[in-house]
Image 1: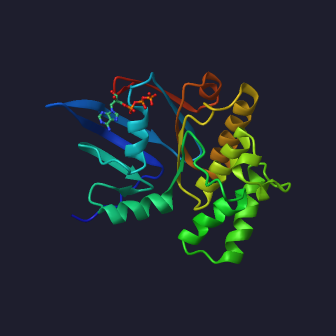
Image 2: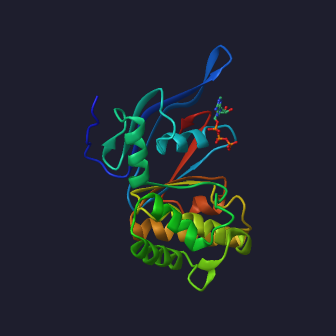
Length: 230
Ligand SMILES: Nc1ncnc2c1ncn2[C@@H]1O[C@H](COP(=O)(O)OP(=O)(O)OP(=O)(O)O)[C@@H](O)[C@H]1O
């Protein structure tokens, strides 16, 4: 089956069902979930532990294939994609900010971004200029780009994480509990940063969170309960 281009940008899920094996039955983690995240807008999903938030992000990131339903990323229907094609789509169109900044302990902030550039085969000179510009845009311009993770605060590490996710200029930005490891003030700064990035870079941003400050900054707010979206 070949993939079909669909006249829609951002991210669309339609009637997505995801189940996991559960003994001799199946547990329904996502129950006919439909949503649309559009460029330039921040869509937040809130839900209790076990409601399916991580599962939803994993499907949106093409890391898990749903049992049924449709996922469209930047106009590309993912249904017919091979694993290799899905990886290529993820690399080009999707930025993922995980809950814990998964930074490599031996690399400086700048090198974390250059490692991504290397994997993508981007010329070192060009990559460095872009990495420096991106780090400056998330507030890490003043020499902090040469620090290693242990020399940065939790909020600064999260900024590196965000800059890294933006390296490929993704159409879709997926964010998992970005403020969970931060105090109130640092969390608020990260929220401002994500809201600004969404508007300025026109990313279709989908984030899951418990943080009520974050929720108040979202353009759209959806509630997930037992795998169903309201
Ligand atoms: N790999 C798996 N195998 C079996 N069941 C799973 C698996 N991953 C998640 N589940 C179940 O699917 C449901 C949704 O889990 P998910 O991790 O998506 O929820 P969540 O809202 O992200 O929870 P939390 O906030 O605690 O991270 C839960 O009932 C969970 O136990």
